Length: 424
Image (cartoon, rainbow, N blue to C red; front, side):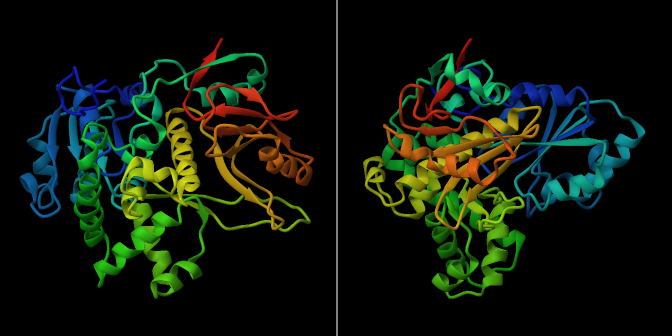
């Protein structure tokens, strides 16, 4: 399988978000596609809408006077129109709003952005009722694997969590080992490069995209210190966020650490999952857990030089957990009815890596970077059920490196991390 994200239709990998994106353009005057740099936003839109007019905005050059005279800019760009990296000309948003108010025809404008501060917030305020925002992540396992058109396993499990007790599964045919896939990461370009160029790619990505955009977002007096911060946060992936510890390790204030982490979130490089809590007499953690957005960037930041080195790294478990959490987040983005996400940990040490909440039911998930999980790995599920006996808690999943689905306790199952779907 070829992973080139260029415009050659023989090489293009269909994205799982495609059907949802097309449907949205049929009902909304504008659609905004947001996500980190190099996740394939432009390629996706050009592939699906090859006949749309297209313009790429620039942070330094005022392309076609888009900032100086946005109405004139739009006058000379017929719809339907793709405006790429719209955060570089926020003046265009108001002009788009005025035109949509005059004509509510669906699918007129497709906008992309790589910074949450410049797109999501401004769009939400300026184009309320006129646009919808959709997020594009790096490749999912399904996109890297066999591009199955089937409904993702997560949606089926949420619809009927008891199906694991009676149904067979299918798994994805991944083109490389788990170590290599996580070491490469999930950005499109990292899928095609030779192994000896992967570290150079991630180095360039960090310098060109992360550090450059940080300069546009905020005044960082010491970029070298910020780079150290980024690499430290890679080591803290899959951990509860402790600003005191971050500040102490870098010699910066807690407020600076908090502000810098918010910048990473705005660039789609960092995600957080809040702690789950309800009225209970037991003490539980209230800190969110944080996850780096790409495992390849983590390996680069932590100088993990080869795929095989990943297996012996003290970060192996955290990196695997990050990959699974990111995979679940990607599947949720494709769903019409997503979930609330939480993590849970009691002060006695019992924990669930992830809890999904939908329609009053809670779905606990534990993530283990091993091939043979046991009943001991379900202790967090047992503790959760005892702590909240009034809740409707579904059978738990231990997502791991097994190749098949099997029961490991009375209520809980082990499933492969490369699960494709359930066989009806």
